[in-house]
Image (tube, rainbow, N blue to C red):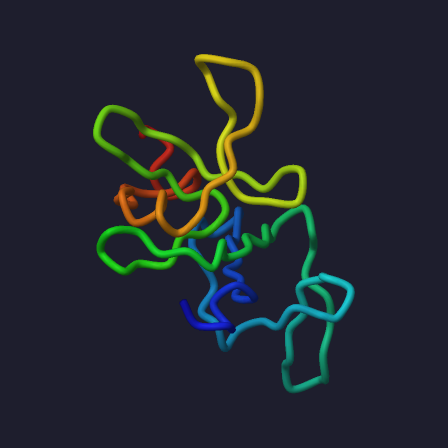
Length: 120
């Protein structure tokens, strides 16, 4: 894992139903989503644009796992969330939140995300 992987983000445009390219936005120091254009810079509408943070962890194929990704392990599919200062998923079989680490993540395969693959 690269030290910078943990601090990467991706941004979903809920109006156009697509992810923005990394050169189309920046994340401000306070966590807002901003943009540059010929008139200067500005803030994106937080109701339209959704920021997803990288977990800093990679799946079995070496693909970086982000908040909102749907992952599959041997017998289960889960959606990655951020809660209580960590990334993981809400456990169905018992109460609580299961935080993931790289050892666990390396057994997952990303199968989609909550925006592009709502059917998963």
